[in-house]
Length: 417
Ligand SMILES: *Cc1c(COP(=O)(O)O)cnc(C)c1O
Image (cartoon, rainbow, N blue to C red; front, side, top):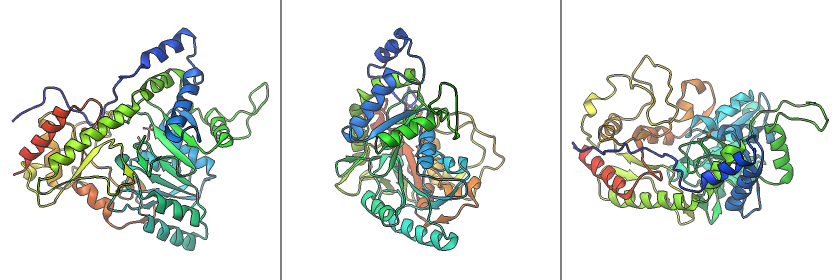
């Protein structure tokens, strides 16, 4: 069988802007601390890009830190409940538990794969009845960059007066109705991990409504110091600011962000066209004209009856190492099966592509099916579980060329019996 000479990865950041100039400036001026001209410049660039300067942005050490601080800023405390989209990466939910609060998971709708507004409302009513208290916040996610049914979600959040946190870690630059995601709710989370739309090698940011909110987030992100000549604390803070070096990379990356988004969308065009006529494969696409996805990761679903080469032999032995992740450290497991796993034809497709030197990965496993969250309440409709069983993420980043995308489509075809 054919094999790509280079490994085609899911999404690998690419240093194609003037990152070095900003890093060199930081060194030359000895700004090598978690504040300085690059941090300020990066925050301004982001606020401009996301909201034409209307909102404020705080640069942080990770997207996970941004979720954590957003929850605190919304007043979430130990014992409170927070509604979290179940179909997501664990970083949307874990900070809820850092606080000692309880995540309550809400399933997705079929169109955008993001939080189902009707189920969200049902969950709010039921939690309020059961606990006598309204949930304290809502964490909405833009999975794979796809805009959610944001108007409906905002309407529910407003109706029950619950703050909305948008986890736009995967959605930088995606738009709904011409407005960039992460700017619809109270707070918007961004991530600059090495595999996101742009990178700072590792980092994140929080989009804030105004100067006061930004000030409060900065205070919490820098160990919560009071205004004395010595260190005085009345609150517990965190060491979550972004370094001026990392922010330099971010400023350089901002100069190519629009190009990156166009590239991801161009690769999406090729996949859309290539998969259009293949029976049993569906490309996950925008479903209304108001949506403009950054297509951070392009994804497909495989009909369960689609026969794929080698599907009889999958799940025989444990995978070695992490599948499709930069953080290549995993705990050794003792069973090849879990009670919720991708269908055999999906795993066979992943292995087939892997042999062709193409990295692919199942969709995020819903949080309500994660053992660590087995006792958390969940409002489900079967959508995320079904998608997890039949979905696959395909290479999409700035290093994926047109030829790569065409080769991937050809290999997917070849894998079908
Ligand atoms: C990547 C990601 C995060 C966390 O970002 P980090 O910068 O890796 O901490 C949060 N939520 C979602 C949905 C993500 O994909």
